[in-house]
Image 1 (cartoon, rainbow, N blue to C red):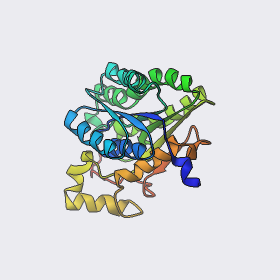
Image 2 (image 1 turned 45 degrees about the vertical axis):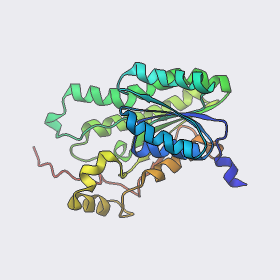
Image 3 (image 1 turned 90 degrees about the vertical axis):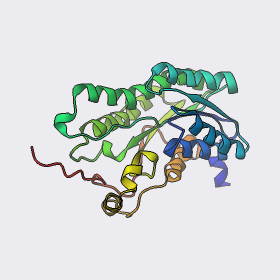
Image 4 (image 1 turned 180 degrees about the vertical axis):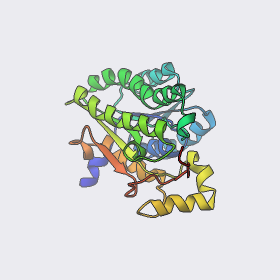
Length: 262
């Protein structure tokens, strides 16, 4: 049965930024396919809610609440997977983000902070996860990037640059880790997460995002999670070094800030 290729029975996954949005949806989707999970975010109550959803489908969730900009916290997630489950098969580097700013407000310090939160965090977790994956003989790393890593618009200098870096990091590291570990990314389009609530709760801005997306809607987190399952499972076993675009056909930024000429 083709559906069997999407099963993850006996596998263990670590998901960062898993309290809400894409991370939470990915954790639940992986659990529904048979995986146990280690989930991390800043807020324990959010993690508890996700863990309850995981338990409802018969899988276990270990929660780690902490500041995921702290590389020591990131490294502890792989250790938690090993100590609680004895293995690690899948890493979903979902934590990240940066607030768009006008060019003259985008300081070098802000750019460095954005790079740290989006790229260095993923690398820190991958460095400790890879040896554990090699013990199992295989593994899958999935980095959640963004459509803004390949399209351009005013105000996105930091966010777009670091997401582009994460996408190319994916391609580079896939060569380092082949053939036993696959490394892919998802370039997500506008998705209905808590980070976008300030936009989606404003009718004019929500309409703009829908109009600028060829499918004329915003993605559900579960649609991105479906891509995570595909790349994590045997269904995606012949894919590495690729950026899967789940963006509704987006080819321009779906939010125009109307920044004037300098």
